[in-house]
Amino acid sequence: MPQQSTPSTGRLLYVEADGGSRGNPGVAGYGALVRDPDTGAVLDIDAQPLGRASNNVAEYSGMIAGLRMARRIDPDAAVHVRLDSKLVVEQMSGRWKIKHADMQKLAAEARGILPSGQVTYEWIPRAQNKDADLLSNEAMDAGAAGTEWVKAKSGIKVTGGESIHDDGPLAPGARVPEPAAGAAPAGVAPPRRAGRLHHVEIWVEDLEAARSSLGWLFQELGYAVSGEWSEGASYQGAGEYLVLESGPHVSVGGHDRLRPGLNHVAFHAGSRAEVDALTEAAQSRGFTLMFADRHPFAGGRNHYAAYLEAPNGFEVELVADPA
Image 1: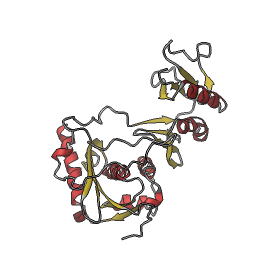
Image 2: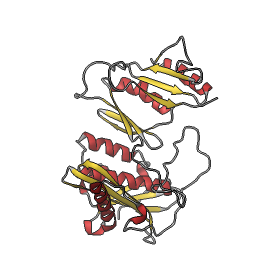
Image 3: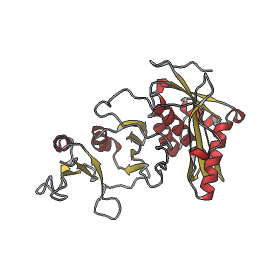
Image 4: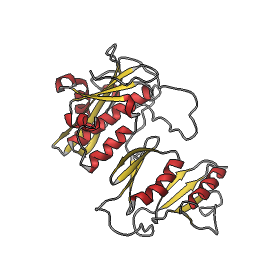
């Protein structure tokens, strides 16, 4: 087995993941689990249908789900990812280039989950990945039937109890961990993923200008840079993520918020004082304060917010917590 980069806890977790597509592209799904390598106990499982997607997207999605489960269990553990996809292993290990834009974004998302020094990758034969394979087939079965995958009915059972790692209060600006997949009090149905925001992708003409304005603002709001590639950058939040992307496929011209389509994106931005401070800092970076004659109540007497236009024309709303 490859040498491990052991963090302070000295603990090791295995992530086993798989994904498949019946048709490639076709009905797709992924499965992932976290295993204690010393006892063989399964600490957590996850599987989800992906609608219509390629096999590679499903493989990457399974790995991402496994890394997130491992982070929830112990964000300081060394994580060894075991996959039967040689493509994903070689690309994530840095030995093969990632040419496809979709794969670049998924790889960037995966690398943003844990520090690179904590994660290693290993290719294993499909025969050694049967549990993750079963989970991914359960997900594809659910997708084909138009139903949800149900953790309690899975053929793979959690055999080792785990609690979410807790180091005390979060530091300012730290991201809130995602709730454990399928976790819910006894007798209460787990929250649905369907309908929840997954990510927002913003196409820009000038990537560097957008990163210095919108990218800066995302980080001030608590998002962390989770990936960078030649034509884009991603910013990870508590569950959703944001993408800025440019390239030859983007039409020339700035964003026009008054045309049909997306008008603006609004963020919770803390207290009124924090909104004011961030608004002032944003203007020094080229943002323009909109509706200045009605600021900060342009949205109504009980809605304290700043409406800002980025240098590329994109509008962002910063909403204060209720007084």
